[in-house]
Image 1 (cartoon, helix red, strand yellow):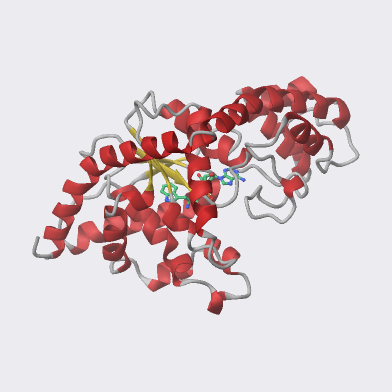
Image 2: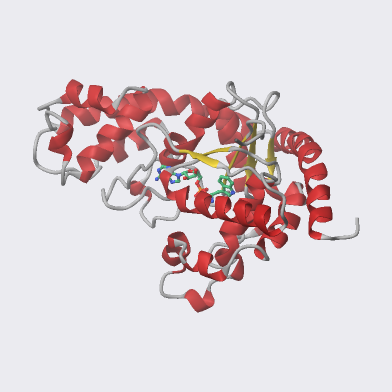
Length: 339
Ligand code: TYM
């Protein structure tokens, strides 16, 4: 039996603008969980430097960091109650990442599918940071001894690696149950939102086509147009869940509706059974605008005062450090560093 106090940690990369997948897969659950247990939410700016398309411009990293923080707040994370901070502001993340680099095995990282996808044919030219990215992610979580990590489905493998690292550290240093084995919290219909242009591809910040995703900053017309243009098939919507087999675009749009409406998928299927896509898309567009426009408006308002966002990040970092510092000190002693 684990003796660890329940604690949530999660983060998002400040690379481009957040999209509907980030919102339904993760953010929406964060907002709910902040009322259930203590939470820490960071903007993982150090991870943003790993991207394979070369270095992000410093001003883009700064802007995107503030924008991601604004998205957390606009979606309903309350910074007075829940620390929001930038990863680089709490140096313990980097310190623990180094120790974990010495715990994780090359073979484990070689299996990471996201590295394979992101490095593509150019593995040799990818940054070392992109390769060890999941090790830093494990440090983000375990430097707080977090027990729960709300994420989308694409992060599942990284969470398994974090558990493996925690377990190996506990074994190697003979400190049973020192680190908790963090649990992924992957729930709701939006755990894997797909591209609007291709139901076989994940909705992603880095897809070349902006029409493939709904950005949290899109205005009402853009949202409605993207939904109307979303790829579909020629058949009416299915009568039941079985009828979704081989129809990834229909499944994706129904899932998005379910996520935004906070309804079980089976109820949404029943609601639109046998209808044409055109009518359904109008309703989906209306729902998406109703849910997302207030978030976009609030993000815009917050972004107009970047000094206030920076204050929120610094104050969140201070709170985060009060938890991370003593844990890191203890870890240093455990591995034999003179402190
Ligand atoms: P990132 O920035 O790629 O994505 C942020 C969160 O959004 C989820 N997500 C999706 N969910 C559903 N459908 C999609 N199409 C979709 N795209 C993205 C992701 O699963 C994630 O929850 N490695 C992480 C960031 C990270 C982190 C951490 C997360 C760094 N350290 C510690 C948790 C704990 C990432 O790149 O997420």
